[in-house]
Image (tube, rainbow, N blue to C red; front, side, top):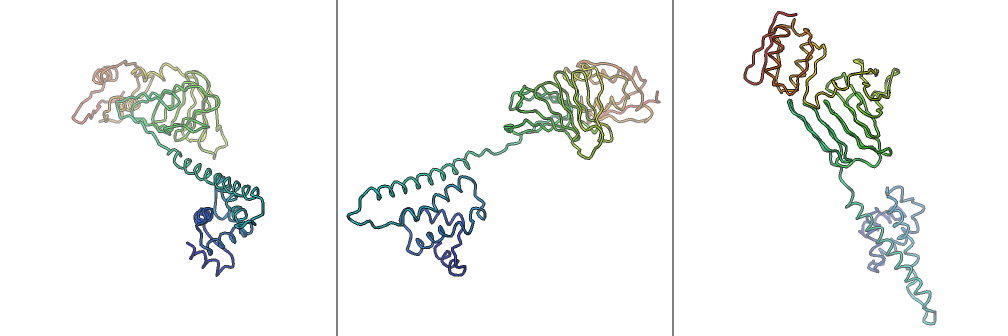
Amino acid sequence: MCVNLACRYLYSNHVIMTKQEFFELADRYSMYQCTEEEKKLYEEFCNQMSDQDVLKSWDVDEMEATRIRLLSNLDARMSITEVPQKQSWKPVLSIAASVVLILGMAWFFYQQNQAADMEQPSIQLVEKQTNAGQKLSVTLPDGSKVRLNAESEISYCENFSKSSREVHLKGEAFFEVVKNPKKPFRVITEGMTTTVLGTSFNVDAYDRAEKVTVATGKVEVALNSKATTKTPKVYITPNQQAALASSGDELTVNTVELEDILAWKENRLVFRNVSLLEASQELEKWFGVEINFDNDKIKECKFSNEYSNEALENILKELKFILNVEYDMSEGNIITLTGNGC
């Protein structure tokens, strides 16, 4: 290392060294292991340090900066190598104590840096998902509960940050959030961010028509898009639902039947004046099947009904009776609906 430093000193008229070279040379200097050339280079570098402003060029943290300042003063304290025989030992002991103190502090900061590097936690992302026909209950790091509907996915950090709790959602989930006024809880979907301090609510984000429905407490729903001049944020309370407009730039608030919205949590299917196409999409998620239509005319046939833990074939039989449609179940969980329309 000293050869490289000597070359850089020779051609630049001042000493240039890296942060690592400085720490290594300082250790050798403090242990009296430097050659005369290294000793001269180290002392010269310490003299030039304020002019070179090395702390900025080295990009050091606070601990390293303190350590460098301590070590850069070491040469001045160690320059007295000979003491007259008649001189009192007190100054010598004072110098020795100062050197020991500086070395001790430098070692302390070094150990602190090493410990901080070793203890720095790696960010672990947790992902939970369900397939068609599945539901899943998840407990989050803060103790909050999540009930995940079919074909849904949530992701979150294994340990929430110090300032917030964030969950990313695709699909649908019901949240029961542990209250923490100092640490907001956020559910982030494609188009909206739902923020609460502690409450229970349902988020439906299967498609662009995202919806948030409150069961208890108060919820803030905000658009993720900043390029809007319409309604960027709303607050909703129990039995209210915030819905994202199809344009993606506005939120609307409506009063809904909470029991119908949350029926899926109790394995109940509720259809209120829905088209057969809408019902088929729900049945596909619920039972893990594929439903096709032999005639597009029957897609818009509407009906209302409720089913609790009902088998798929029983539901199809009721649809046959209500809407006069036939069904055929083939291998691979493929169902074909036929009929002449409503």
